[in-house]
Image (cartoon, rainbow, N blue to C red; front, side):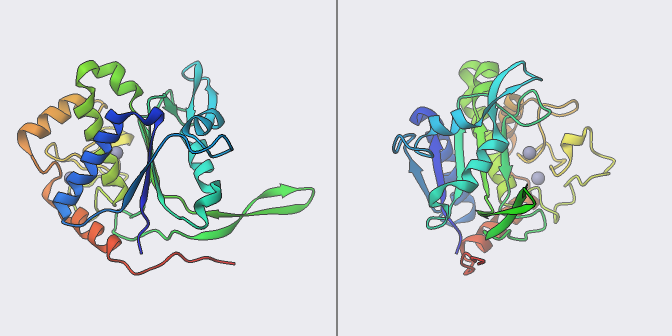
Amino acid sequence: MALPFYIMAENDDRELLKIVEDSFSFLESLSGISIPRKVFGSYFCKDDYGSIDWYIKESTDYNPYAKKKQVNAANLFNLFGKEPWQEQNRHYELMVLNNDLFVKNTRFIFGLTCKKIDFNGKLKDDLLCEQIYGRAENKVIRERKPYISGIVQSAYRIKNWYGEEWKPAFKTMILHELGHFYGLAAESNPNMLKPGDRRTKNMLDVWHCNNRDCIMEQVNIAGRLDLLEKTKYLNKHNSKLFCEYDLEALKKNICKLYSSRNGIKILN
Ligand SMILES: [Zn+2]
Ligand SMILES: [Zn+2]
């Protein structure tokens, strides 16, 4: 049994939520499969884990590369894994923010995705397992923690860069990340760029598609289109947004995930 997506937007931003919803609907229309999801408000209670503002506050660090405070996306995933309701109500995460995001050693990132499906179509398990966290006073610290799949995206840079045109660009990005989540670019795609492939223009090209007509091509690096140019290009040339190989893998993977009977395994 696949898990539902829990969707949250900073300040309940309706424009962001609409783009997320349109992106899921688009994938449903491509695959013919309904994708379980639930939109949560940005505030549930004033306790820990009770609001998006709490997550943002807890995840914010000083980033020396940007010389300012930003939300650390890795911290967010760490908190997702510790959510008190993850044990009973396991889910995939989709959080969209207006705050700027980063991870260690970057100036900023658009977002971070922890895939549910590998490039070879293999489903990752939603294990809830005991993991060893560290050692203190010669004692091993163990904690029960689920494997978290999901997506965190920020609209901050896109709004700043593209002004009035930010919405279609943000949608392209959400669909690209959902593509990664569902196992793209796929190994069955001859245009998928593996490490060492001579067609790669930059290390950020790896695990992407080399086809200009495909939304899984990398953007915003030398030799590739800018995100907004890419969005306009796709709208003109490929209404399905994915290349034939990635589209086929996407349909197959979504079908496999949502018809899978594997429940959540709990290891004691
Ligand atoms: Zn990508
Ligand atoms: Zn492709």
